[in-house]
Image (cartoon, rainbow, N blue to C red; front, side, top):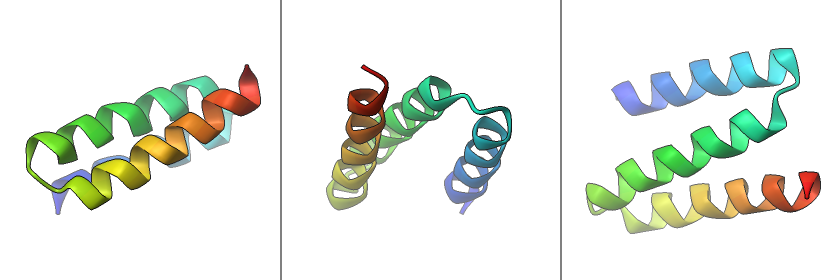
Length: 58
C-alpha cells in the first residue's frame, strides 16, 4: 500500500533528524487521508499517536 510506504519513509526521516513536531504533523496528515478513505480505526490510531507527540513537545 503506497500510504504505508510513504508513512514509513517520512517517519524514518523525521526520527533521523529528531523532528518530533514534523513527525506529529505527518501522522496527523496521514490520519486525515485514512479518514477520507473511510478507514476510521487507522485514522484514530494515527490521530492518537500525533496527539501523544504534540503533548510531549507542548
